[in-house]
Length: 580
Image 1 (cartoon, rainbow, N blue to C red):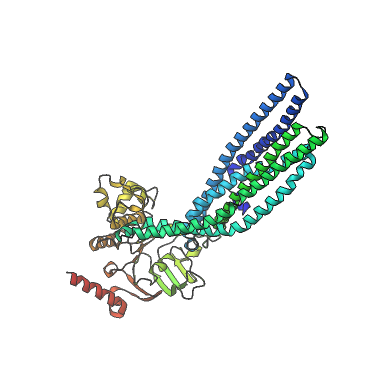
Image 2: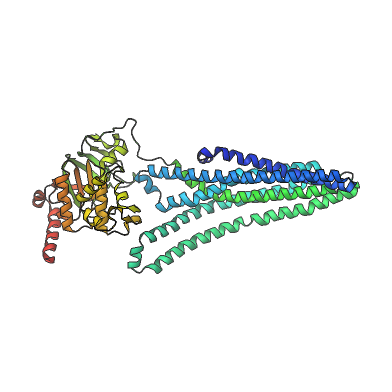
């Protein structure tokens, strides 16, 4: 795990190395200061002249300034290294998520991925900065101060042999108990973020059903759950502070007591006042180092689980990969399903799709009808290889989709979903997701085919109109038409409309279909719809039920041979007559 995270240092290696180097300089000078001070005290007691005092004083000032300079530079480089490390870590995490297949995304919830990219990365960043700075300073100062204490105080330094084991045992106990608690806390953080995400995303629904109080209570319960767990962890970690104070007070009592006893017994020959002052200073440095180590320990305990969660994402391999020698050209828009069965989960008892055999010629218009849960969307997701088939094969242009370069394949298979997504930016910027190099004329042509041009130019800003995040300032039907135009700009060989005209009136829907038929004769068009009117003029109509294609044919053929299709058509036609 540590090696995996260290790869994110990259261009920040220099700052990462310079941080502990300057910290070594700061500690070395800081630990030498008490010794020089003790020597000055002994010299003053012995009756030295002013020149020696000035020399000692100048030496102390220069060393203090040097220590301060090293500390400032160390902090400067640590901040730079930490920020750069966090940036690279977020970049690698986001890039990894972008490479995930749908089945990988299904493993992690959206809220969990957001928490890992934000809170977890921040915790690991803080731990990284502590490791390269404070975690270098504290052990160095601890070792240096103990060595100097033994050199100047002899047997008095044995006090530390009593306090350090007590502290070490206490810290080990805290770590053993705290780690499982933090693991549970982070999972509850995911649930808390999920509550926020759902509420914000569904705000219109919440308000329309007047469920604000319910949502507030749900969030409050999740927040209280996190608070209770954090309280338990913090109570455990709170033992750390009194443990440190116990060690500190033991040293503060025993060191002056033992040192004073030695001075009195030896008459100042074995140890003098300067040595006592130096020992007290070193004892404080040792205890402060232990205190800092305990803080590092707490931070690393917290960030340890965060680091594990980050590495879990980085270690997850995409379930879909390009072949060794991928096909980079899609010959045409023909689609073949050969004995295809598919499960979302390998352990699932039943298949989402079962025994599908289809041949769709290039340029054909195919309508797909079926009830909710009949696996219509699952069927079309296999064409652009968003999932891999469990058995059988799906071919596009006569080539198994698993043999294509995935970017090439998906650029030639454009999918427009029912729940379309627009991004914050102008209309033109959203359309150019389909083709970043599209000319203004190409934008207008695509929008005319999608019946979007008229409502775009009706706005004062036209194609420069700003679209709010998620397309909040356009209607559902307008959003669908913009997304259809965006898909057309990809110049695909296969165009899939997954119930993407559901928010469009029947007249506009008919104009879109007529434009496709006249202007896009060579593009294979697959249209999932709930309205028979949207697909009745298709070359082939598929009727799906319970993950199977139960019938296929033209409108007239299905009316004559398929009860499901006939029932849907009759109910919609009668409904239209009743409404008339």
